[in-house]
Amino acid sequence: MHKTTVELDEKLLQQAIKVSGAKTKKQAIEYGLKELIRSTNRSLLKEELGTYDLDISLKDLEKMRNDE
Image: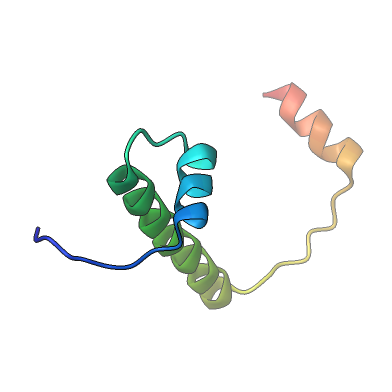
């Protein structure tokens, strides 16, 4: 780990701290970076796996959940 100096929009950073629940600027920035990576990985996985059409209704899904 090393120290990096960057100029940030202070309003944006304060909003990120508020919505993330971070206690420090560092925590808010790290949280944002982790979320960016997680979101990107999720999108890449979705692209790789594709989509599937399931012939199941909401009622059937609820029944399956209750049967467990």
